[in-house]
Image 1 (cartoon, one colour):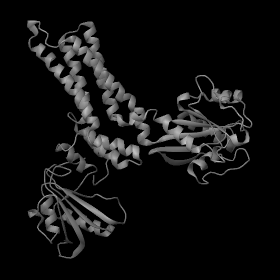
Image 2 (cartoon, helix red, strand yellow; image 1 turned 60 degrees about the vertical axis):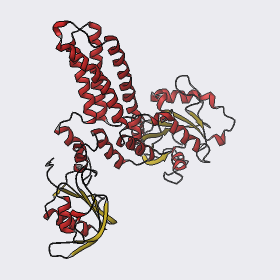
Image 3 (tube, one colour; image 1 turned 135 degrees about the vertical axis):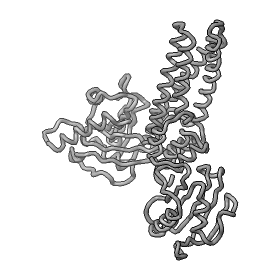
Image 4 (cartoon, helix red, strand yellow; image 1 turned 120 degrees about the vertical axis):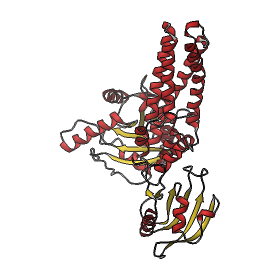
Length: 462
């Protein structure tokens, strides 16, 4: 990424295409000068920050390009920490392109992807974890992913990491002080307190690492596979969940021969439902390919809804089917379908120790929409077992996970060193390594390659 912090950068900050309004953003030491040369209605060099002005944009021949609203932010009180001007133009692609070219000719440079947010980071407006959360906030598609990203933008995760680092830094300083008095054989850092601190920090790190599985699901959505034997009601269930005729429903076994995928949001969480071919032995080449795809989807799905036609499937048969699929109880929900045709069935007959029970077996009738809402609740609570989990810090970034794992390994090495009685210089080295990895999360320690890797994933204009 070409970066010169002395340049004034410009980009269109709204999505491509035609719309009512398009915004052009300028940032840098010459932002006000360049903006004033194009905005002839008022000298923006003389206006205060946090002010809005109506006027016209004119090119070098004084031809009017558009009537616009100019919003002025003066350093350091702006998103980037620099002087920033935003022009709200009419959303014509021609107008936006012409205005952009005018500002480029006037001395601005086209912004690289993520360069505005990178400048915000470099100018101390946010740390690296917060900057990465901006991209997550832009990409959020539902209430929960938005809430997680907003908490990180507001510094929730950063504050927790900062608190861990500070406690460790305080002890590291005492260890380092001991090294200065190596010949005196003094001990400033209480080893018992250090051991307790290390255990406490590692518990916090382990909690954060365990939250990643949930965070990853909440961020990207829950892959939910609808599986079962032919004619169990899988396509009927998909239609009932979506409340529309999305999949073809027929009494003929083997109607679904390929996967059908649809998105549904439940209580602010995204679920991607995949309707699959009925699982059975078949000589039909096309159907057998569908069965193979169904088995592949089951193996990698986060959740599996296994549909059972209770009019033809006895408990022993269901147990054999689930055993053959090698199902994991934590990601399995068994739906006892067509209960309207078998109303006196006892659901507990289908409970198998270690595999199924009241928490993951639900009687229903997909055709009559019986217990469809109950299924949605079950899906949500299968993912979020405790609502309080959503109020805690949840890790959603693989880079953060890697840094936490490395920090934990270094802390484990410190504990091993304390147990084996190694000298203070080895303990100090491992503590410094742990501090380095924790610092890399928030960007207190970072490299140019790391910054490039993060910010080039942003859209231009942000």
